[in-house]
Length: 273
Image (cartoon, rainbow, N blue to C red; front, side, top):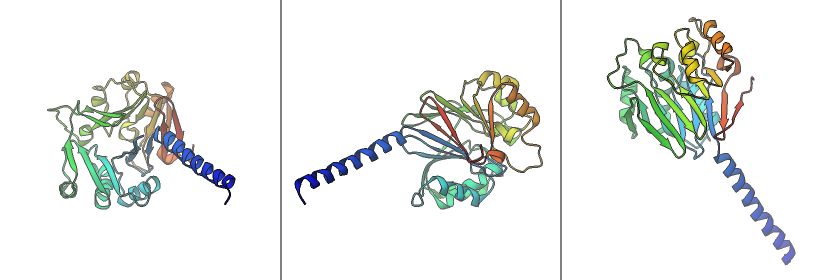
């Protein structure tokens, strides 16, 4: 091999390394949030720019959440940095139970409210840090910040929906609000301006009040919903969202909804938009 050819090969080698470095850098500068279509239930997968993986709720089906995670994570990756259980209703907890069986989970957060023996047994078996959060608790993954907005210490919960853990996530100038199934009674305790709203309780008429939308001013609303006999999402809520000119997507219509943020702008990806 002459010096000229050798020099070209060496140059191409370094250009290849540089190109991969550029791809890695730009990929690493984005936050990805995927609202999974898990039928009538919630399951939200987050990958931070520093490649931390977070799962908020797991939907009603144990098998479906595993299929969804397999779409977003490499087949060899069986570790999740954090799972969040908003509350113990079946359409939020069932999938997480299966995740605990099949994945190594480093951290678990929930309110500690509600009974599910299988959940309790599994989180004790996992070699994970388990935290019971209340208003004001914060979690940081590099430049992605989570703040617990609800519940507060000493709150009473006559119904399980209003025991839901509510988290606000900020990445630079982008903000997301994850509401679980709280009703408008508890939404009225939240007054944070946001960009993306996970509509509470699958679009139930008992949530997403006009006053709440006035205060939070979301640009985008995501409704996680499937076939159901409850009338979700209610026409009342859909009308409110239209009246506030909030772009609204639904997992029963749009399928999995991925939002990519560079910290300023949001890009929406869905096969059915």
